[in-house]
Image (cartoon, rainbow, N blue to C red; front, side, top):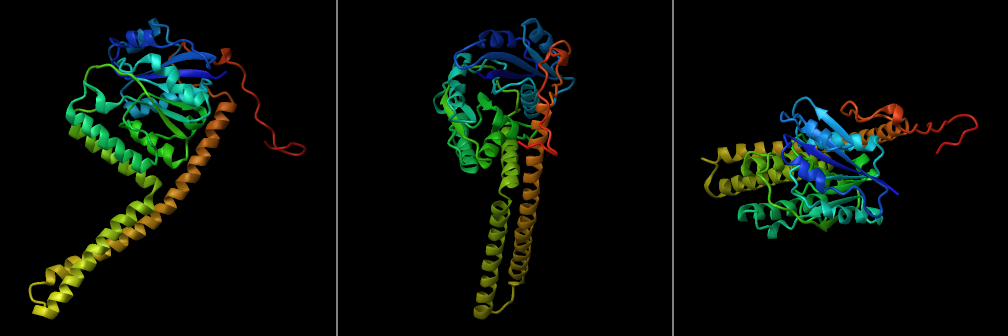
Length: 345
């Protein structure tokens, strides 16, 4: 049976972490082992020491804050090197109901999904303000359109990944992983499912200072990641709109010149020429970006092979001292030898 690691990114969570750890399951049907991994993202309140006292199996600790997205990525990398077949990500503030973890991983155990997102039902949460409900609804709608998935709660951090998905997802943003991993999963043809989960009211989010700040950073993240995977569509749409605007202004200049003469319309002609030139350049940039995207795809394939090679060779994660000893780990199988008389796998 598979090994499950529950990872918990933390930033100054010494007060709430004990309740969160206490609620997590140590076993349930379909899983052979359950281990806990805490990622201490530069906390200054003794979060790592609290995790150690609570008997957490593994700790990754940053000396200074790196951001939620990097903490998440570090946790996934450590979990893979620790032999996880399934990785569950949850919050340290005990927002998500730990008893829903078996339901969260069940689609993966059944072979129906590579990634499962917990649906909080934000439209029905009483502790969400009306504005936050509206933003969650339309934000998730935008992400569904960009990613091609059906996840109704794109911002939920309560999610599970199988080993295949964890190896293929590369978080570039330093803000949040939730939106980026969904778009990537959709573009990489990973099977994404969602299940209803329960939540409880917690303190205000520490990820963003205000809703406008969150919207701005989320918008930048979405545009950035979507442009990486659909550069032709993004640049050609922008370029096409500019060319169309230039053609309209040019047609207006010609029409008014025939009817009333060209006096006073030179500005329209200049703007039409500028829009057309910029639009054509944007379309050409889309072609170049598409070539770069093809190169990035090859780079990601190479990174995937390197990750698999590291895992076969028994690469060890950067854990807090005393929580993992390479000498205690089972020896990794020797890599297959390809050469005379050998058959590559």
